[in-house]
Image 1: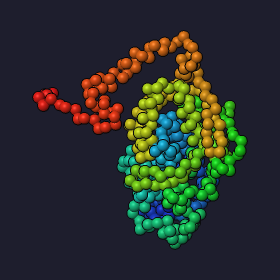
Image 2: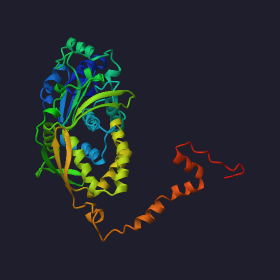
Image 3: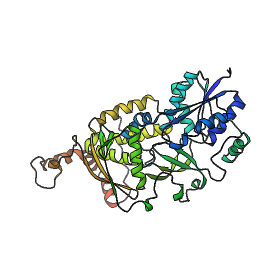
Image 4: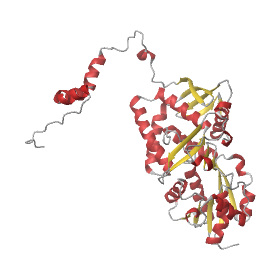
Length: 422
């Protein structure tokens, strides 16, 4: 047996991580233990074991993390309502801390001294992987080859692979940068690097282009218990199976395609296309249920917090006290988020088709435009007097400012008594 130190590599079998195996052996003298996390990539995992060993790894772990991915990462983020920059449902972002945690666990088991990853020095994933490792195992060395080696492009990476007999499934001409799991598929690079280019329909690998979706709508019904989906169309599913079912329904109807230019954590803007059919359905359904079950103040505060939660997930600080504290708040709000949401899917769109909950705060007795015995409309006058009191006081004290608002002119600066002392 070899006495070389060990490194655990986050291994996808793609171009970058494949060439990292011989590079680590050449430049560090490490024995490379590859770890592939099954978070729903599907057929991508099938050839990995043979490929990893042929490329020079001494061992490969293929870890089935699908259900854990859903229950411990997807559902908390969905319950928080976290969406990055109004569009991105964080599919790559919250997979990284899960993978990093398993890398650390294997490193401890194998007695490894380092962890390596294939994220580039321009992207967000380097931060996500490394921040998670530092939070869980600050003693482990982290190796990021893209920040060290002389390879500067995909073309050079292909050349390196060919020189080291690394099997390739990409070429210099056909190489979108993609990340796939059971939540989404992302596309970056090539023609997408110019935001003026419309995404090509043939690029889509999950979703049907909306124009080609069926001409009749599909109805689905999702049942939630305390913010977590438990049944779809009357059937109970395990966590990963539920996402798979919704993916199939959404993809067939062209739901969940997002084209956006996002602000990366490292400072640059990046253009990507995301396919997230099941996730888009779940977010929409969960929000519709919260509309019924959360009071106004809680609902609005949760909306504000969701922005910060999304930033934290995107930025890779999953294992932080603040996110854990936010989860405690979110879980408290979800105690009454139980009920059933019916949706209509049609050519890329989702439309609400009815929501029910035993904890609904909607009262027809109060909301009706017809006569009622529960709401005294004369009470509103006193409420408005109190609510508008600060504006009334200011208008009284500064009449010139009020007059300027009516005429559209500039308000006269308020005169201050020169002898005034605080």
